[in-house]
Every structure is written in C-alpha cells, then in structure tokens.
Length: 553
Ligand code: DQQ
Image 1 (cartoon, rainbow, N blue to C red):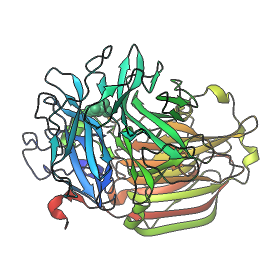
Image 2 (image 1 turned 90 degrees about the vertical axis):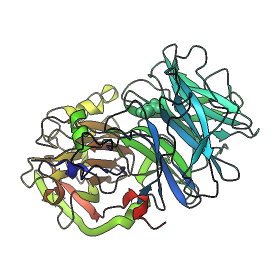
Image 3 (image 1 turned 90 degrees about the horizontal axis):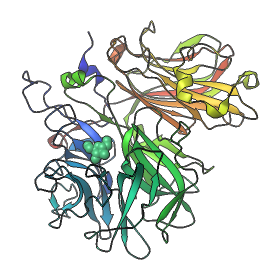
Image 4 (image 1 turned 180 degrees about the vertical axis):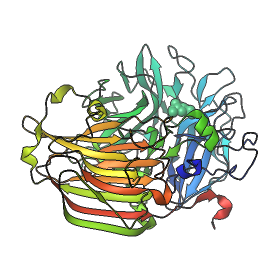
C-alpha cells in the first residue's frame, strides 16, 4: 500500500502538516492548502514568502488568507503568523493574491485582492505594523481601502492580482492588475503619486484577444547582457521587459519593450494562443511571481505546483500544493527567451555524490546511478552525440505541438537519436518510472531538440493524472552538448533542459518507488549510441521547514 506521507517533499516549500498525529483528522480544522505565491521579497536579512493558504482544509477554500514564512537562505523556512486574513467589508470573503513592493526608505507595502462583501474583487493596501521587526509579523490594512475597484466594462470577478509596483522617472508609481474585458485578457494600469491613491490609466498596458482572463500578471525588466537581475523600476537601454500572465493553467510570457511615455508594452511577439507561446514551464507551474534579490543581484522566480492526484487524495493527505524550488531567472544572451536555474543555495543541502564521466550508452542501455538517495536528489547529466548527423529527419517542424509528440505512444520507443535521458523515481524492475528524455531530429538547416517528461508509467496507481509534457529546446547540438538537470523530491520532479532553456515540472505519486526503494537510471532507447560526457548527482538533505519555535531566530 502506498503511504501518503511518501509524497511530502523534503526541500521544496510546504507549510506544516499539523494534523499528522491527530486521529480526528476529518474533524480537526488543521489541514493546509497552498495556492499561489503572493509576494516574495527580501527585507532586512530575511526572505519572505507569502502564499494563498486555506487554514481550514486541503482544498481551495471559501475563505483564503495570506500565509507567511521567512528564511535566511531560501532553503530553510519558518512559518509565521498569517499576514492577512479577511476582516473588513473590502476583504471579508477572502484575501487573494497580490504583491509586495519595497518603497524607498525600506518600507514594504502589500497590494492584494480582497473579495468584498458583495463578492467584488477590489485591490487593497497593507503595511507592516512595526518596520523595525525584520520578520514583519504584523500587517495593518490601510484605512482608505479599497484603493481600486473594478472599472467600467470589467466584471466584478475579473479584476485581481496586482503586481509589484515600479516607479517612473517622474516619481509616480505604476502597477498592473490582471483582468478581462470584451473578450480580451489584459493588464490594467494604475498610477499613483503616494502609493495610496491610484488612478486608472485610459489604456491597458497590454491586452490580447488570444488569452483568457489574466491572473497573477508579472512585469519586470531583465538585463540584455548577463545573468544579474535588476530592480523592478529600472528602465534603460540595457534592459528588456518581461510580461507574464497566468491563464489556461499555464504561465506564459512575452519579451518586449516598455514605453513609459505611451504607457505601453510592445512585445517582440504577441501571444498566439498556440504551443509556440513561451512558457516558464511546460509542465506544472502556475501563478508564479518574481522578485529582485538585491543581496545577490538576481531575480528569483517562485511558482505554485499543484497536485496531480484527486481531491479526495488531498483530503486524505491533509495537504495540497508545493512551491517550485526558487529559480534564478534571466534573459538568454540571444535575447529570445528566458533561462531559469535553481538558486545556488541548493548546494548547501548536497550530501553524497555520484559521478560518471565519459561513458558510452549503447542502444537499449539502462544504467543505474547508485550511491545516492534517488528519492531526494539533484542530478545533472550532459550528453554528447557522436553520431548527430545520423539523426532522423524531422517532418513538419512549423506546426507541431511538442507535447503531442511526447504524448505519442511511440515516444519512448526508439528513433535514431533518442529517447535518451533519466528514469527518475523508478523501481528496480522499472515497473514504475518517470522518463525525462530528449529526442533529436534533423530539420532543414538546423536540428530539432525535443524534451519530454513522461509520467505515464510514474505510478502503478490508476487514479492520478499522468499527462505527459513536452517542449522543444532551442539549442544547436552541433555547438553545445545536451544537458538535463532534475530536482527530484518524492512527488516532485523539476527538470531543466539545455542549461535552463526548457523547464518541465511534474508531480508523480509512485506506489513502490518511494524513499529508499526509489532508483535513478540513465537510459538510451535510440538506435544510435550516445555518450554521458559527465553526470553528477547529489543526495539532497532535508531542509528545515517548520514552525518558528523550531528555529533559533
Ligand atoms: N488564485 C488566487 C487568485 C488568482 C488565482 C486565489 C490564481 O487571486 O487569480 O487564490 O491561481
């Protein structure tokens, strides 16, 4: 029998599960539920993570609040008092997502969506009660709330999730709110001189007919040269802007230019509403948020990774939802996409290491990576393709949805080059396995690299969603080796293909391949051989994620 406890993650953020020893679980109002990230930030020595939280159950609740946890290092977290709970007519039915902005003089503010007494979505402001408390334990709501209400033409439940604000050279603050009007998803722009009184700008910063309602937008600059992040208010010729919106269960983004005179965002390519739209993650990741970490000059992304099991499972487990491992995010040197990589702090959790160099994987080989704890591991493998020119031809490159290619029942069957990759959370007999792999094809004058995460054999359990995910990796295998890094954590697998060009996160619920029984393999099912140029895998120790009392602050 599988045990739900096997699915708790060890180094991905989750709130505590305080009912674990409680025999009255169904009655005790102590389940937890994590939904979207609401406003990460760094303040006076601590990283703060706020998140949508249901203190009364393991399912999305009628009354959602802002959970709050803090960390010295983005790895170990302690849970604090809830930051925001419904209390006033303007948020009495829930405190939904929003963002934090740190104003000059180190003054953090929260802008969040309240569901008011009439079920309307309105934007509210809150500030810390005591600015000298680095843990910012108590928040007070602004007496002038709500500061924004649904404008004309916007339905009362289509107006939410304010972003981190940015300040223009005129000193005014700008913020966008996710919305939909006239069948267009949009980012409505507001401006303020004092952060308290906000005026809607006549036009949205961006709108599109090809999207649904925009949830949790994010808008920020990225350096055109280098991996460093910049503060959200930076605007100069050395940056481009990212516009991210959450809709249709995914986080999509566009790169482009922000013109402050026109108050408009001009994307290099608009959302198409097809699989060619850029996504942060081609698996599970939603309602993400970034923040600028001025300690290490980097921008960090967090996203909500929900469950793939059933609602009933969540109730039995007593929890639902995990946060992605924090990822550094920056612009690819080619300017065409973003790159993501787990923050370097993960190295502090690394334990036993296994390494392999220069090993040929003949067609049909499966090779175990031993000496590590395969249920809790950080693995990176780099492949060399000596027979690249022999790859199969790729038919129809323009119009193909990569996820469909990966979903094809033959995807795990051999082509010439691939599938090759990792088998994560596998049993010794491979009765359970999650295959994360590449297939390489020869296109017209370039190679096509397909990356798949195949959950179809991830569990002997029948009642979980095992959708396979897939995406192309924009990489030229003639110039660069093909690499895959996966963070495996019990029920979570975050994979980074091509040094962070393509990310795919999946949730899996093995019945047998759990804890010490889980194994990790490298495989090659292609008819041509590939070479493991290098492989490094580290067991990852458990992070300290718990109540404040368990830490010495
Ligand atoms: N979740 C929040 C909303 C947001 C949605 C409610 C996105 O504010 O639009 O918990 O998952």
